[in-house]
Amino acid sequence: MKVLETVNLKKHYGSEPNIVKALDGVNIEINKGEFVAIVGTSGSGKSTLLHMLGGLDYPTSGEVIVDNNKIFDMKEDNLTIFRRRYIGFVFQNYNLIPNLNVYENIVIPIELDGNKVDKEYLDLIIDTLGLSNKLNNLPSNLSGGQQQRIAIARALATKPSIVLADEPTGNLDTKTEQEVMGLLKITSEKFNQTIIIITHNEQIAQLADRIIRIEDGKIVTGGRK
Image 1: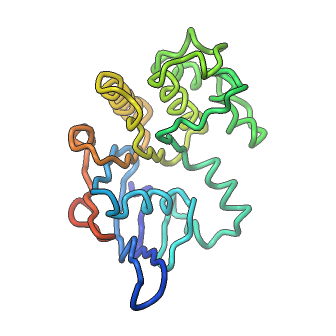
Image 2: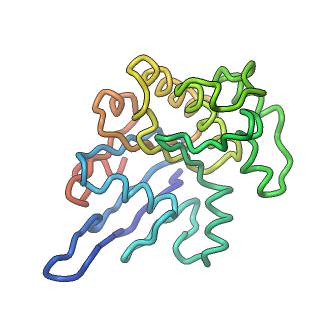
């Protein structure tokens, strides 16, 4: 079942004759439960694409459809709420709140919506990610790999339609990088979670179910299953 689609997605900067086409007619489809890697060289448009998929930036033209919702047809306030409920984010720099402990960081998107925590589901995530004995720690007392696990748990906590991970292992050493990617793979399979990662690392990309390659703002291969 298709959970995400882009239709002729474009993002242009400047004007002719100096226009920069960061995205130039991108069409991709991603099904529920897929673990997809978007790969490209620096400046290829992969990060721009991720920002569009997550509704963090607006396109010049085209559509992003998440769970049958055309996200750029929404008013800004509604898009903010939709993003919080349906899209999970994992960033390279973790983006944790330093004065909240591990548990508080994980549940904050749920509490912002005024929703009740699904304790059984959350306990399963925490256990899967090996965070059970770290819940009272502040992020600053933990390693980079542990902080990235917290970010993954937070992204999964709201049961989002998709999780977007932007170079999630970029700040980690090789061993920790492999552990984090393994955990993303495990959580994708265990929770039937759709995960899309941006990476320039070919080894990392090979762990995905499918690789989408982007160059010069255009999809080269893998856009549709």
